[in-house]
Amino acid sequence: MKKLLAIALFFGVSLTLFGQTDDKDSSNIIKLNVIATRQVEPATRITNNPKLIDTIITHKAVEYPLLSMKHETTIKLEPIVPANVKVSGDNKLPKLFNGYVKAGISSPLMPMAEIYYNNTRSRKYVYGLNIKHLSSFGEIKKYAPAHFDKTNFNVFGGIKELTYSLMGDIHVDNYGVNRYGVLNPNANSESTNQRFKEFGGSLIFMSNRMDSLRLNYSMQVKGYQLSDAQPKNGNSFFGNESNLASINNFWYRKNNNLFAADINLVTNHFSYGKKGQEVNVIDTALDVSNTIFSFKPSITTYAKANRLKVQVGMDVSASLEPKNNKVYIFPNVDIKYSMFENVLIPYIGIKGAVKQNNFKSLTAQNAFMQSNPSLKNESNYTAFLGIKGILTKQMEFNVSTSFAQVANKALFISDSSSFHQNRNQFNVIYDTITIFTAEASVSYQLNEKLKLDGIGRFFNYQASKNPYAWNLPVYQFIVRGNYVLNNKFVFHIDLHGEGGRKAQVFDSTLAGVTKEDGKFVKDLGLIIDGNIGAEYKYTDRVSAFLQVNNVAAQQYFRWYSYPVQAIQIMGGITVKF
View 1 (tube, rainbow, N blue to C red):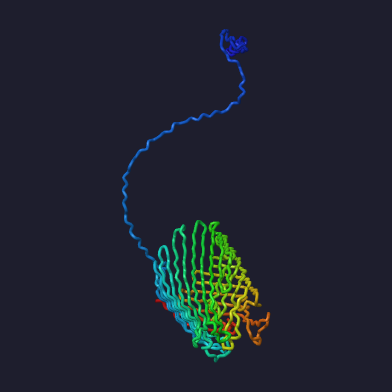
View 2: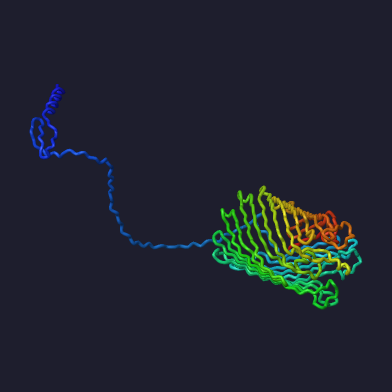
């Protein structure tokens, strides 16, 4: 019933209502039979789309006043008791001894002795001396007396400070040898004897600045005076050489870069006899000087977490010789890259240098040469490529190849005129040689008990003026080993071999001599030289040793007509004090 009344009322109201008119002044609204006058705004359409208006409410920044407060601080220092470090067992530092003596004798008769003396551990001072002697009184069948003796004396000392080091040494060498390379066992040893006497020393100052922003440097001055045997007749026909060198190195490190420069000066003066006093064709007077000045700047950069090393530089050298002054510019580039955490390290580079051929360096190669050699400075370019790395934790390897061009390479040939004086000597000649080298090596080490090394080399020579590079090997191999048993016995082996060497001779009637390019050539044969030895440590101070040299008893020719001793057996003792 209520619903019907509500519906009826709704329809009744609807019939009495009127909509809005266009009259802006007024509108009559009738509602529930009540007439009233109201103001109504005209209807207009809103064309703008609705949008969100975000209101940002700002807050006033709260400021706190700075409170000035002072707290009293009390510092109490407690003394630190020095630590007592006790080292025991295998962790102890090895005991050092001031002196060491080694003495022995062999068959054929060959006495030897070595004496070393130096200070023990010191933070500031280092000093000492050593004396060595080795001589032989053995004979080689059918040849002239083959005696020799060699004595070396050296004393050294230095100071090591926090910011610098100063070191120096003085040495005296006396070396006598017989030119025994003639088939005459009754030859007078005085006529074949040759003796070299040398006196020299060096002084080096080196900075030890730990600050990487400071320039570090080392400066060294060294020199020697060398002469061979003066004839008993008192004439001046003997070799006499003076050499003085200044070696200076500077280096500065900044970040991953190392800037370096070497400035070197080497001067040499050699004289033999006096002009106008020549007595034969061999004794030709000489008085020559030559100097080499070199400047070698370089930059070394480390990158890729120090796996890549690149060194770039040059060598500017001036070779000053009699009637032959020349300036050389060599590149010096060395690039290495570490792969797989140093498992493989390939490398490549090119380098060059000027080398001084003097009386000392030549007689060190061949003591049977004449005392009046011509002296020329050697220059060389070398390009190399290789890779080295680790095969196992105990084994490493290296494989490389190189190509070099050497100007004024010193070669030794037999001198026919010296045979007239019942002695076999060698002349020095020079040639430009291209050398290709291939080398491979492997090493094995098991803790400190076992060490093994093996090296193989192959050479190919192309000489400009000669059919062969005289006396230089075509191939070489070296095997070395060391084994320690129970810290009491030490065994070692050294095996050396080379072949392909050719010698220029003057006698075409000798067996095996051929003629090539107008020169008489003789093959020097294969060298196999094996040495083995053992040492027994009786105590930490005393031990005994046994050494056997040239185990194969091969009398090979080191130089043409100069065979070596067949076999040598030496025994002796060592004492520390």
